[in-house]
Image 1 (cartoon, one colour):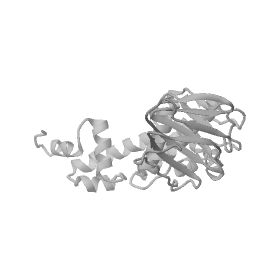
Image 2 (cartoon, helix red, strand yellow):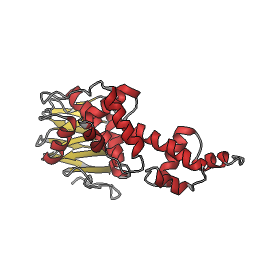
Image 3 (cartoon, rainbow, N blue to C red):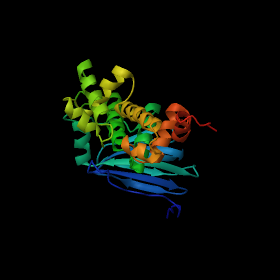
Image 4 (cartoon, rainbow, N blue to C red):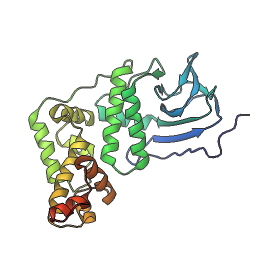
Length: 280
C-alpha cells in the first residue's frame, strides 16, 4: 500500500466570494493516486520535485515547468515514479465556480481542453500567484484580478471551443471614470467586480483596459493610489498604523510591504525623513 508523508499538508477551503472554488496544498514523499475523477475542473502546479501523471492513455511527467489541466469527470492517475519529493498546489472549480469565472470573463461557455499538460511558464506563474493569494486571504481585489486574468489567458491560449472573450474597449473616458472612483474611494474595500460594473465592463475587460492604458493591472494602480495617499498622511505626522487604515491597506504590514517595494524605504524611514530626522 502506498503511504503518504505524515507531515503532508492538505488544506482545503472555499473562496469567500466564489462558491465552489477550493484549494489544496500537498507535500508528498510517497504517494499513488489510482485512476479517479473529480466533478470539478482541476488545475495543478508542481512546486518541488515531481510525479508521473496518466490521462487519456498518455503518461507525462509533472514538474515545475508543467501545468496540468483536467476537465470535469476526466479520469486520471498519478504516482511518484523516481521522484523522492512532490509538492504541488491545485485548484478545484465545481460548476458554480466555473459559471462565476465565465461571467467575469463575459462568456457563456468555457472551453474544453483536448490536452492535459501545457508548458506555459507565464500561466504557471499566474496560477501559483493566484493560489498563494487565495491562501493568504488578505487582498480580495488582487485575488479576483488574478482569477480572471489567469483563467482568461488559459482559455484563450489553450482552450478548444467555448465563447470568444471580448477585449476591453479602447475608451479613455472609461479609464478616467474608474480611476476617478479609485481616487475618491481608495480607503474603501473596493472590489474588482464593483469597479467593472460601474463602467459596464466585465472584470476581464477592465483588466485589459488598464493594461493597455497604463501598463498596470487595476490592483497595481489602486495600490499606487493608496501609497500616494499614505505619503500624504505620513508627511502630516499620522501614525503608520492609522495611515495604513486610512488608505485602505489590510494592516500596517501590508503598507510596509508595498511601500518598501515601491519606494525602497519603509514608511517609518519616510516619516522620519519628512519630519527632518536622520534616516538610519
